[in-house]
Length: 351
Figure (cartoon, rainbow, N blue to C red):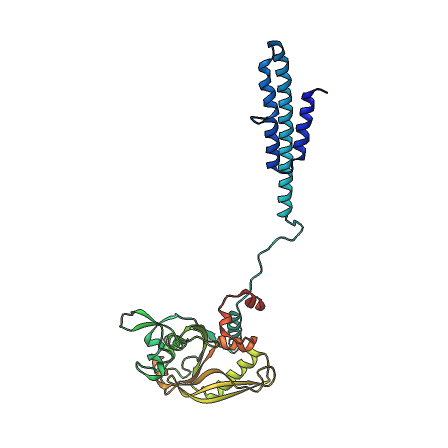
């Protein structure tokens, strides 16, 4: 074995011993660098004769090619090893099932609203929907609640900086009660031709669920909340009918007969007499506690008149219940804000 073969083997051995790209580059410099051993051999050609230069130069070039080939092979090995480590660190378990989009569900307030509509629908009530931005007249005045009336203080809140053609302000409705007037007026116009007939017009029997707005925010109140307004007007509708309808509704909504219903005297400008409706469960975590669920009463004669009807002929009752509160009681939720935080951990329980 000549000296060039030994040099090639020495280079191959050092390259193989290099465990990092930096070590490999240092080994390369010892053989192919400016002061490397192959470079020194090339410099030594100057002292040889022309004939020996040709043969010796060819041998040194062959040696250089062999060293460069060994260097390239080791570089590739180190790169492959580094890639293998990276792939191992970033490995994906392709045996896992793919991530799928979760199935959605109805919001608990929507579920409660649909349940309310179905229950009252079974009792012959229509469902009405109307604007959330109302005139001051529909929100208050038509409901016997004129300007500067003290009963407005809790509701006279969100206003829009504009007026209608009659100079009346617009507001975000504080209740769905304006639908009493809107629906009754449309109903009265539809059956105006029957006003003079013995049978008169058909009874008004309607609920109006929807969003409402007031400046209020705590564990049981929200600036935006949901309310269902109920109205039944005819020629002989009494408090007895109100109690019967609401008792049927509340037992169907909570799916239990094990509850009591009571009426407490109260005041609302749009009803006379007026009452708060309370319920008490006979079992469960709320057993024995009276819980307010609605305001109600006999529709005030002035409101009947504003509907376009004769208060001497037509009478009826109205009630307003908080859908959010009913949902809280039905689902055992103790903080109203959970319904509107958008936390999927909470909402997914109702799918």
